[in-house]
Image 1 (tube, one colour):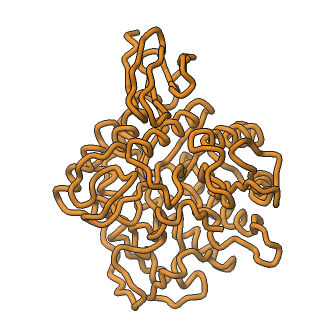
Image 2: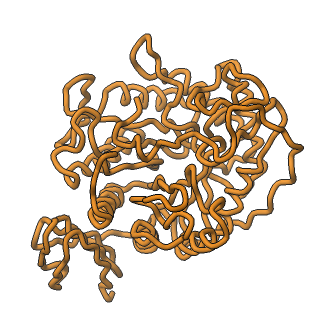
Image 3: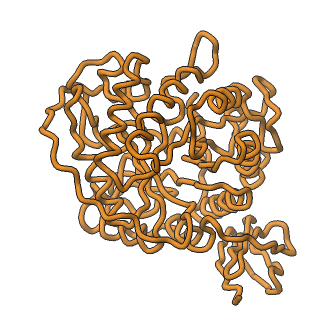
Length: 433
């Protein structure tokens, strides 16, 4: 069920930064790091970033300092998985922990003034049929066996106690390992059993911990195969996914928010009918989830707008990302985490926040900062229209952002002002109120 659209971005998904398949050396558990509490903010930040395979915590002093500045200038959410995506196996032998890499990531997040989030994925090998003391990263997408759900919950509790500044946890990632080949559908019952076990364990540690699931990918197609009622110009959501969400909602022990992820494009036909219209999927899915869940806060743990093969300029890519964020804000998304596709030093890095190994700012960093500052949770949006439909606008009382979605220069009247915008230009404008 891997989305073709995001194969390039996810090419390192679930791999560690250091380990291979050889036996790991298990060191004595070091003292938990001292982490500063998250900084006060004007409201819930709404926007944030997920640290992935390569991040500033391992890039060297210059890049780390620069990335820390980019992320801390407007404090936002920062998310890290406990195993994979830059973190080593946290419990390679039952009851013996190695949190060195996870400590490093959490310390960086704290130094960058992040409001920390942890994704509880993935699971040590010994919980899923592997050997103790050995990590086979090719099997990181396997779920723990049901007999080890209690052990996984114990690991989650250990993580929560080690990082008490973390109050938001997502359970698992994209239903990995919960596909039933026999029924050709998601095994929502097994996932929900894992979720409930973890939920109960974490709430026993601290009732104020916020927990969400099911973190399932919202796949869509153009064809009518497995078609659902949730559809639009952008495609048709797979009914099997909605069935899994429905099962989880009916059988979960509780939830503080509902988590999903997905791409604007379809699996079978790519982006339809165009890259900007396809973004309406995000608001359609959000509205459906809010209605079906009794208005639980909706979290998009990952969101993607470009096909793997997209040969877009960075200006075009950033314009599409900006309009996607407009869809999230206007539909009442509670949280949207950007999957940062950082790469090795010297690599071309479309969509990244900073230049790998250097730390120089790239356009997406400014976009995240701007939306976090002006369109955080609790901000009231104001209706502002554009004289040209190719120019999109999102506004609140003090600020608005205007995006030209055309590949040509456009002049438009917005909020009583004339804007002459270059192709795919994004412009922030003070409304003077």
